[in-house]
Image (tube, rainbow, N blue to C red; front, top):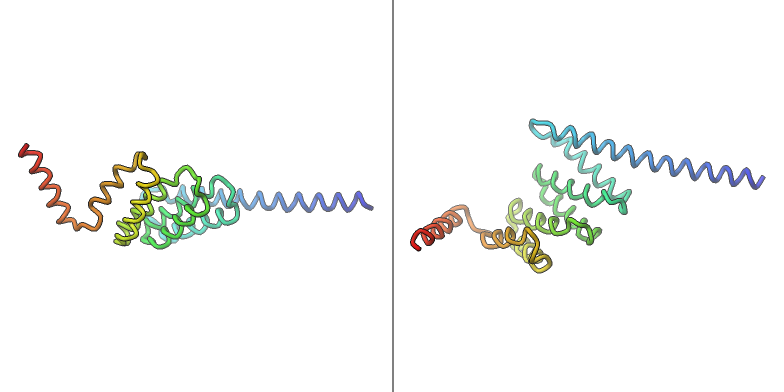
Length: 175
């Protein structure tokens, strides 16, 4: 009788484990199919993009320790920006920073967070803070020069930037 209970318990555990694995594989397969569809030429399908963002977030929520989770969140934030959901992308970037602080793409995440504040929301205070955080933490990163340039032009109108370029160009031709 005891052996039967143990066998039943093992079978139940195995079936739960198999169901979880199958759910994970199904979710990953759905993500891959949607990514493939969205990589096709043509106008982006915002409904499909929204579904993909939900799937990415669902994967990260269900499997937070999976190495794909921060990558999927990063992709979700990028897709959110692509359809004009800057606040959603900021939420996701901040989730990556808080939940995956040791992830290899944290510098790019901070950079893109600052870029989102700067270019999608015109929130120059938050962009300035984020860009400076990047420089303080990653002064030798390959994006550091780009961040310095973005800080230099932060909040300037296109006209101001053109005048600045012309002034610099004039200075180099005078020398």
